[in-house]
Length: 546
Image 1: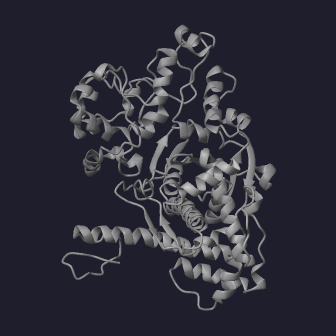
Image 2: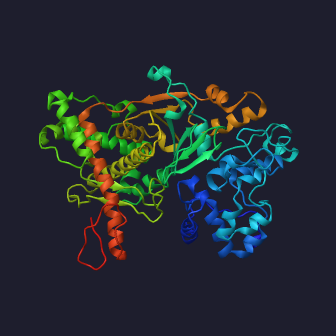
Image 3: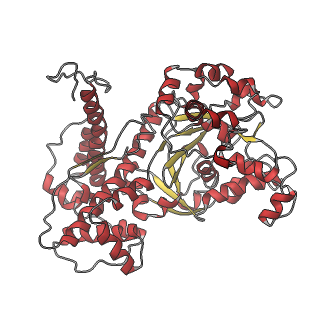
C-alpha cells in the first residue's frame, strides 16, 4: 500500500474491526450471500475491504492489489496474478459456478459490489481482487521465475499449481485416504468431514450436490475439487481458546512448573492429571504422584457393561428422553454415577461451557456471541493450594474441550437438518489433533469414528497434491488424493450406552446455555427474545426471559 514506507500491509482473518460493515452487508440480503450461509462473516474479505475504504482511505487508494496469502505466494513464485477458486469462492463472494473458461469475471457480482459501496472494484475490471481465477491444481504460467527459483533453491520453470487456503489444503491432504483397512469398508467421500483444528477449526465437507445450510459457509463450487461443492462450518477459536483458558487460570504457574520439571507439554500434563483424578475418584485412594502422559489407550479404559448396574434398554430410553429434555425417573442415579466415575469425562459433571469466547462462526454465524462457564466454585485451598488449583484448572480445561466437541455435534446436526447426508467418519488434523484426549472426546461426543493422518503435516500434503497435479504426475486431484492420502490411526467412540446418556445430558445443557445467553443479552437490550418459541415476559418493560 505504501503506508509508512511499507510495500505490503496485512489484515488478519481474526481482525473483527469490520463489525458495522458486516451488519450493513448482511442487511442487504443479496443473492450472493446465499452461497456463504445466508450472511457474510466478519472474517471474510468484503466487510474488511469496506472497512479499509472508510477508515484508511489513503491505503485504499494506493493499494494495487488485495490478495489472500495463497494467491500472493503464487504471484511471488510465478509473476502471474492468478487467483484460486478456493480463496475467491470461500472468502471473497466469488461464484465459480457462474464463471466460464473464457470469462473469469462472470463469477463476480457487479450488483453486489455496487450496493455495498465498492463499485470501484467493478469499474477497474476486478483487477485488484482478481480477474483471472483458475481451478485448484492447475498450472500457473511458466512455473517458477528465475528470481523465485534462486530464492527457494529450486529449478527455474518448476511447475506451480493453483493453491488453497491452509485449512482446505488440509482437507485435500486427508479426505481421499482408504478406510477399508481400519473399518472393513470404504467410507464414501461425501460421508466424510475434515476437521482442521489449530488456532481455530474448519469443518469441511465435499458433495456433488449444493446444500444451503443457514449459518454454514458455502456451498462453494470447485473450492477444493473440481465438480464438488464445499460446505465449511467452523469454530473461531479452538486451540486458542484452550490455551487462553489454561494460561489465564490462577494455577497456571503450578502447571507450567510441573510440566517443565517433567519435560512434557502443559496439555499432556493436564491429560495425565485428569486420568489420575478419575482413578482416584473411582478407587477412593490418593495417588501420590502423577504418572507419565497416558497414551491414547489410556482414555479407552474398559467399563463394566450396562447390564451390570442397569437395564440397557432403560438407558437407551433415558437417552431418548434426554434429547426431548425430559427426566429419566426409571433409572437409579447411584448406579449411573458409579459407572460414570470411572471415566475422565465425568469429572466435568457440574462444570459446563459455551465456547463462543470469540463469537459463533457456526451454526449461528453470530460474532457477538460470548463464552460461558457455569458451575464455578471456591476450592478448599487451605491444605494444598497447588493441588487444588491444578485440579480445578484440569477440570476447566476438560470442560472447554468437551464444549468444542459438543459444538461439532451441533454443527453435524444442523447439516443433517438441512438435508445433508449424515457424516459417517471424521478426519482430523492440525496441532490440536495431536492431543489424544481432545480426539477421544470428539469421538465419544459425536459418536463418530475419527481418523488421524499417517503424516502430521497434512496441509503440506494437500499443497503437494496441487503441485503433483500441476506437474502432470496425476490426471486429476481425486487420483492424487488416493495416492497421497493415508490414515495413521482410527479412534472409535465409546459404545457404552451409559456414557452416551452422560454426554446426551451434557449436550442438552450445552444447547440450553446458548438459549439462556441470548435471552440474557436480549433482557439487557430491552428487546424481545431472539430465541424461537420463547415468549415468557419478565417484569422489566419489553424484556424476555427463558
